[in-house]
Amino acid sequence: MRIKIGKRTLKFSFLCSLVLFASCADLSAYRYHNTYMMVNPVKNYDKRYSDADMVFRFDIKPKKIESYITNSSGNDVSIDWPGAEFIDSDGKSHKIANIETIFTKKLDRISAKVVSAGATDVNVIVPIEYVTNLEEQWMWSLKPLFDIESDKALSNKGKTFTIVLPMILDGGEKRTYQFEFAVASVLPYRPQNPR
Image (tube, rainbow, N blue to C red; front, side, top):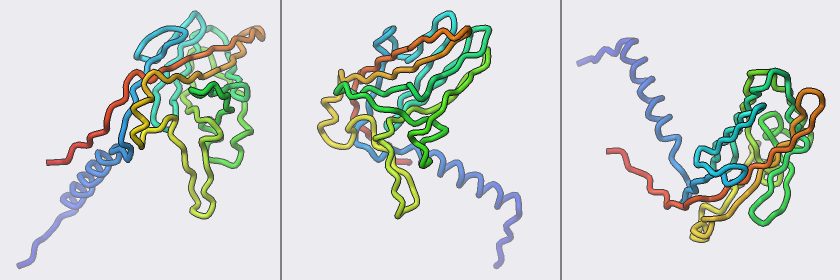
């Protein structure tokens, strides 16, 4: 007995496989998960701040910080990425890599970025020292922002870090924004098995 499989069935099977793969791709290899809140210049769990000229939103992942910087002024502004810093929980300042430099050999050659009026710069922030090039394996590795693998991760609660973002606004006005974030809670990672 021969079973005929049509092109539609193959396409459907392929799409189902992709969906299943994508849903499993978010499973964590870590034992713990940190939740974060912004504590300065404002306190909120949205990790969002705005003033008359700019809107900042951050999404903190285990190994990187995703930034969404919107220019709400009527003129172009420049993000001074070379002057940006990540200040860790021990108070040590680190230069950062962003989406332009993170997986290149130009980690330390970050350049400023102009954001037009009304536009949003979508980027990532990673301390340069947390990026490793594994040349023998032709890949890059990122170190987590905090220990989330051992039981010491439970002591992360309350630890803070700061992002310093210098900006150049209309007319050459220099303004430095500092955003301090705290680990609000540490949760054990409990993956759910598919049924």
